[in-house]
Image 1 (tube, one colour):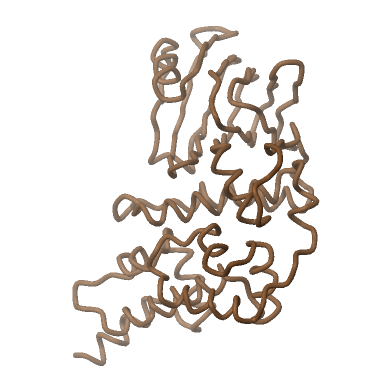
Image 2: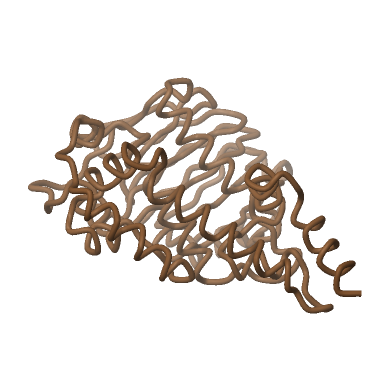
Length: 324
């Protein structure tokens, strides 16, 4: 049953043809077949697009098989309940809550009864751009992920947690998520995949990097100060610093005690605090959080309290009491 991505539901039906139509129109599948009693059939699906990436959740009460068309993306499957099998060419992997499975676009997915899963689609070209920015050079060959890996491994656990955090952290109570925030989410989940799912560049990604010069760290810091409202990507940080992402992140951490992205969060929290202190009567914590690039008001409140020792609502209340 859908829970986390319920606001983005694209299907909730007991009719096979209706679900087939959604799969063909929204998910670009080649075929969809039921392997059970039609009377027991029920399918649900939800889809959130970030930009170059998308996260979907699907639930099937009956056994089904889905064959997707080819495309320039990779798919990561995180099974919550049930089991199944994913195959592509001569390769296959069992799908269960114990593993994350990675498959090419044109894979065949076979689901057993009562299956509930998340599927993360990541654009392959954009992943390789990210990889080039991290390494400081264009990869000599395309990235290849392992077909499956256990969820309980340290790096994989972080990747799993990122998928779940993203799904659970979506809040559209106060309106659609602003585009800049979707872009931030898009980048962070791509990086989680690169560093989490084992691939042919894992050793390089976790290897030591040449140190960036102190002036490169300072330049990055000053640029973030001046551009925190922009959609800041790792590619841009590499361009501004003149160093690879690995080098600038490692040197920034050594010199400052935190990474450039952690520093960016601090800058945005400070900006939110400044706005809360001078907010007009109609302002809200949620509106200010969105304006400062925080997509989830609950997570924003937690991070704000961690940094300033009070909730954002308390800052706003104090400012209004002072102005009264």
